[in-house]
Image (cartoon, rainbow, N blue to C red):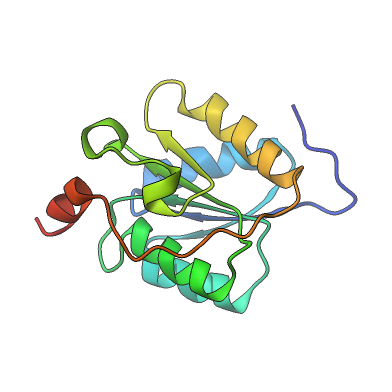
Length: 147
């Protein structure tokens, strides 16, 4: 399921779990993509600001800056950025594309690898659409973030 391209598309992968970074990086590289990683939202935002990425894939819950705050800041700089949010809290917190600002929200389940591969491919093949920047967080997400 390699993604055909003249030059490899560049993905920014942000997650504080080193094992998650490694496995997702390998999956995306097997698709023929160039992957740069960051261990938290702050470093991810710094890399986003200093580079050019076709898709950003970020975890929700991370130290220093969570995924929703990183998405909010990315959208403020580039409303057309293509962003995927990964979380083990999708259902309990009611995370979705509208309340997170992400183009795609994927639950961390056994089906995640296939969904991630399909979602990245779909986002790379579509023209970017501008999304409004929302400062509102899902109520449940705000409670968890404060823990």
